[in-house]
Length: 158
Image 1: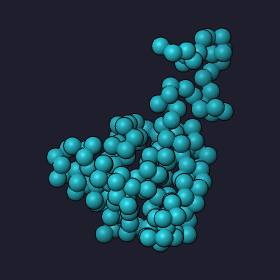
Image 2: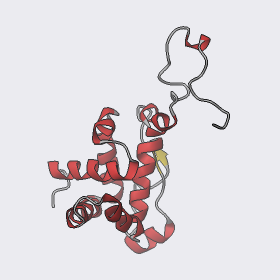
Image 3: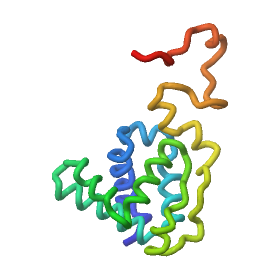
Image 4: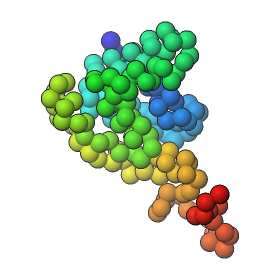
């Protein structure tokens, strides 16, 4: 399997849609899909990444679009669960967290595996900011005189 084949990038977006709850359009709009795909591939290796993406694709076809069942099986997997949870973190907060020691003991230590922010450009594109309806601190300024308007986010209970 050639992990760099176009279908794997499509599979990556498909699993990311289910993991994050954001549309493919929104994920692509961040401009980070290729960077995240390449980063994850480089950390865990092409073989394991291709296996994860192929497994999800096959489960999705078998479950006939019941994505919640497909992703539940992936998240419950000893091999794929930690990677899938990291994919969520990458999309939301642009950070890869080192895989658990138990995963490393079973599937091997990966040289590039460690906790780090993917890139400075990825931080303001994190889905966290869209999810909570705010701009990322220190990035994506709202514009001149927006300080004079009340905030859109309420700190009181509704």
